[in-house]
Image (cartoon, rainbow over all chains, first blue to last red; front, side, top):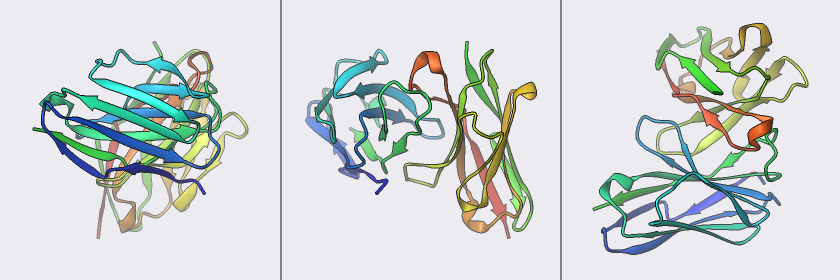
Length: 115
Length: 114
């Protein structure tokens, strides 16, 4: 099973709302990632968790808060977002943390619209 | 700085024709190289990867790519395009010294004409 699942598929939220995105994998992978993808652009890395510890934060604003409750789950908590945060949010996982050779498997993404 | 360049933001081919999508990287040390495909409103799917085992890499859906160190290239090819190949293709690299951080090219949208 090489599947990464993400919920919800679509999310519309106001600028004062608090919401969460969820990601799950059951491949035994020990690295998990959040990416943001704007229309007609490549994915941009936001966060990397390796062995359930945050190892990379690409200077993401604090209104985005990641959480890795266990090796299979990854959450992204959203609070006080701006309209420019509207994008496709992709989760990915790879076999081993901090190893460049391992490919990343991506989920289908959550389409977020901030109104 | 390490980077990856995809030549041609849009490529159009006829059904049955050769597909060639170009990718060049900038690095003094050969990186790990990947090609991903993204269909509209979907996530990215891995087509193939190069990790120094063999310079010609075969992937899914009939795609293959050849690593050429002298040209710092990793172009993606498919002998005969199918309508279902229409999608956006991303070349990505990772470097040993930066761990598992992927750097993506800007992407190439492939259009297949009937």
